[in-house]
Length: 488
Image (cartoon, rainbow, N blue to C red):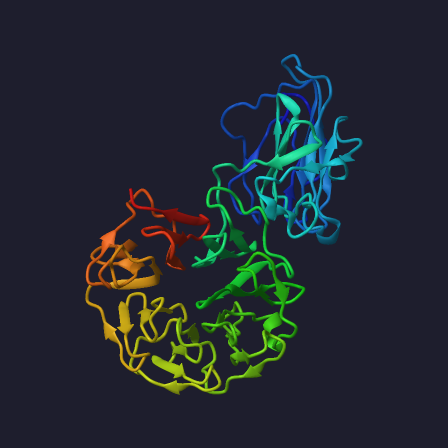
C-alpha cells in the first residue's frame, strides 16, 4: 500500500517460507493465480490510511518464518494518532506458549503482552485446563486491532477468543458463540448435575447448571484432550468412568457422580494411542474397554474387575465391537459385531461372550446399541439407513421397526405419569429427512420435536432424555455444544 510515487522497502522477487515476495512500488497488488505462476494486478478501489505513517508486516508461513517490515511514510489525510502501532503473534511455540508482541514505534521495538496479562475466565472455567490460571494461548491465527483504540485487541487461539481494552486484563469474547464438539452425554438419575458431557478437545464436563459453563471446568486427574468414552453404573449412579486422549493416563473413575476423578491404577498398553469407548456394568464392579485408534485400527477388548488396577483380554469379543452393559443385571453385557452383523452376549460378568442374533446390518462401526432403563435385555440397535431394530430377549432375536426409516442415535427419558414405558428420543428419519423425534408408545408412533430452523449441523452422535424431568431431552451437536429442550 502506498501513495503514487512512493517506493516501499524494495527487494527482488523471490520465494521464502511459502510466501511469494514481490517488489511493491506504487500500488497495492494482488495475485489471483497459484503461487507457482502468480499473476499480479491492482485490485479495484483505492487504499486509504489514516495514520501519519504506517507499516506493513509480512508474516512468512512456516514454523521459523521471519517477519518482514515494509515502511510506509507521508500518508494522508491528517493523522488522528501520533504513534505507529501494531501487533504480531507467535504460533506453535508449545511449551513456551504463544504471545502477542506490540510495537508503538513502527516495528523498531516490540513488547510481549503475555507477561503482564491477567485473565478472567469465570464465565468459562474450563479454559484453565486444570491449572490455577489459563495460558495466554496457542495456535494464534488471527489478531484484531481497533483502529480507533490501540488498546482494544482481540485474538483467536485454539480454544477461544480473548479480548482486552487495556492490554492487561483479558476475557473471552464468546457470548452467544458455541463450538464444542460433543460426542458423549449422560443424564444421571441422581446427584447435583442433570448432565455430564464428553467432548473433543475439552474432555468431560459436569454440568451442575444448564444455563452456564460448568463451574468446575473440565475434569481433571487426569486432564483429557478429547473424551472418547463415558459411562455410568445404572444401579450405582455415583460411579462414573471416562476414557480419552491424555498424557497422564487415558482412563479414570469417579465415586461422586463425576465431580472428582482418580486415574485407573493401570491401563492396557494399547490405551495410550487407542483409548476407545468404555462401559461399566450395573453395579460398577466390572469394566469393559474397547480399544480403538482414531485411524480405525482396533485392538482386543480388555476387562477389569478391580476398578482399573488390572486388565485382561476378552478373547471371545471381536475387536472393535460395540459394547453395552445391561442396566439391571450386573452379570450381563452385550456386544454388537458390526463386521459380522452378530449380537454377542455375556452372562458371567464379561468373562466370555457367545453369539446370539445373526444376520443384522453390517459394515459401519458407527452403529449404536442402547438399553431401555430399568429393563433387562430390552435392546435397541440404531443402524443408520438400515433402520431401527429391537430385541426384548437379550439379543436372541431382533425385529426391525417399520415406523422408522433411518436411525442414527437413540436415548431414553423419564416416562409420562402413569406410563409403563420410558420416552424414546431418536435422531433419524421417519418419513422425510433426518430430524429429532420423540415416541411415547415404544416406537409405534413418532412426533418431530425440532424444526427446520433448529437442526444444529450434524446431530447423529448422541441423544438422551432426562430420567428425572419428563419431556426434557439433551442432544449432542458437532460444534454446537449440547442442545436441550422441554415441551412448551
